[in-house]
Length: 56
Image (cartoon, rainbow, N blue to C red):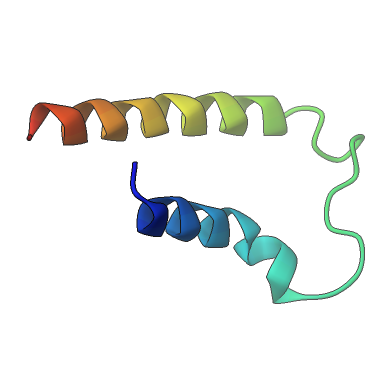
């Protein structure tokens, strides 16, 4: 993965934290949905990487 793609991924991941100041996510508020979102994001990222590699 090139440096531009890593920078873009980092900025997208940090976007909610950059939107406003203060605390953003408390563990008790994210107990139900956060693990699911993280797993789906990991599978989605792996699928995008696999697709990009197959296109070369």
